[in-house]
Image (cartoon, rainbow, N blue to C red; front, side):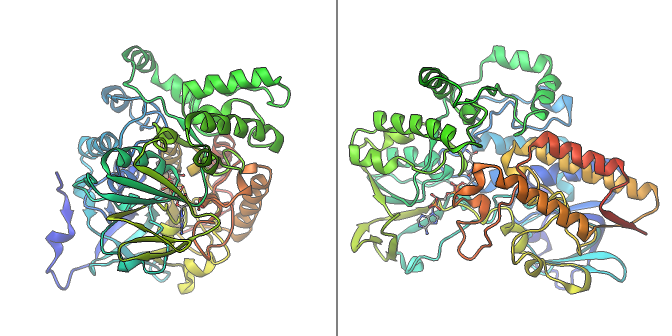
Amino acid sequence: MRYGFNAATAAGVSAMPDRDVDAVIVGAGFAGLYMLHRLRGMGLSALVLEAGGGVGGTWYWNRYPGARCDVESIQYSYQFSQELQQEWEWSERYAPQPEILRYAEHVADRYDLRRDIRFDTRVKTAVYDSGPGRWRLEAEDGARFTATWCIMATGCLSAANLPELPGRDAFAGATYHTGQWPHDGVDFTGLRVGVIGTGSSAIQSIPIIAGQAAHLTVFQRTPNYTIPARNAPLDPELVRRVKADYPALRRQAWRMPNGIAFRPNPQSALAATPEERRREYQARWEEGGLTFMGAFNDLILDPDANATAAEFVRGKIREIVADPDTAEALCPSNVIGCKRLCVDTDYYRTFNRANVTLVDVARSPIEAITPTGVRVGGVEHPLDAIVYATGFDAMTGALLRIDIRGEGGRALRDKWDGGPRAYLGLATAGFPNLFMITGPGSPSVLTNMLPSIEQHVDWIADCLGHLRARGLARIEAEPAAEDAWVAHVNEVAGGSLRSTCSSWYVGANVPGKPRVFMPYIGGFPAYVDRCEAIAANGYEGFALGA
Ligand code: NAP
């Protein structure tokens, strides 16, 4: 169901008047929905502009087979409302995409949000007009909007990355990107399918596509570590216990570096005996999920400690995958947890199927997409369909695909041509009254996104309340504060093994993108404390004005 007002309604209105509001929010994912709710609650007029035809953001677009969250559903949910978290029922340990989308739709309906969301509206430009101190936005359909505050809720993993492979557009069969999946689903029955990529999206979809396709060819450039999800229906007893005191679970999560309540082991891997390590890794492997990296406290800090966990997983791959050459090809050699750890159901086992072939494109890259398949090392792999599971232009892509211009007409694309620079990941100097929710330089993708989103939304809403109470209407990050924050973000990144490999965290997956570790790895609690202290000190590091 889609209501509210949308571009189709507006189509044909040639001289569309500007719509003027207090705040314009770009994106109707979890960030945009909550931001709208908060601003409305403060009595501000707010309008959300959303490129899709419905709410849900990443969960609206990523409809590929097997898509589900790798954070447990009981924690991957809003906590701003007791009633909401009590009434919503998750069905599985890890919620599947359709259920998360239904949750986003429920939130939109429950808080009557759709009447202030303009769907099918892709923002093309956002320009700060310093005279009146207003942001002017224009959408691809020509619609224009003005606002005092411009809030980017555009998501960290929302700009699809489609590699420029030679001959890509000449392919005669069907082509899909996991992040732009057709809404009616795709039936691969009887088809020869190629999947390019072996990140989280590929790892979730490959077992399901293999079950449908006549033949599946997986083109792997870098093997990934993946831990079994052990997904199952949610235990009603667990749900009852959590709901008896949901805030206690949330408080526990807020104290964790990744914003997720779990049991990290405070011991060092190197201090443990080989047998103790094996037992701990085995227990975490059986428990399933991302908390595998909590097996010891030095896994992401010490290369030798990390190597023990990596070797444990490689041992599992060799146990599961029957063909030794395929098993070796699937064994990653890099640091475990450097690229984001994946969580799967039956991924490695899928390579034991007779209808699945793994093609290593690390040493011999894909030469070309031909009209009938993919050519690697002079060999053509005939295909009827290609799935690009090639990820996203992460963290900056969605922002920079909009032509954002600040004070003096300066383009954000120019300011960030050496990598993103933002104060707290919330604002960027030279762009007054522009906020980013989970922007680069904030913990965002290294945490459970939902609490990170809520923390940013609440901080922005409180900031606007502070300004309004003082009759102010302008806020801008100061360059010195921004420089200091960027230096701090880089410094803490340097202490972690996470910044050492060619991941999307450093922009390595997009040719030409500056190589900078983009999220803040200092941990969610330290970050929250810093944001709160800055607010308590009258928004230290920000210039406030009338
Ligand atoms: P990704 O992790 O960036 O993986 C993209 C894959 O495509 C990589 O294997 C990459 O190889 C490959 N690739 C890219 N360009 C290529 C080329 N030209 N030739 C060959 N291979 C190429 O993207 P993703 O799987 O969509 O996941 C992105 C992030 O989204 C995840 O890390 C996670 O944070 C999030 N996500 C979460 C879930 C979940 O909650 N379960 C599910 C999906 C995604 P290289 O590694 O060599 O670059």
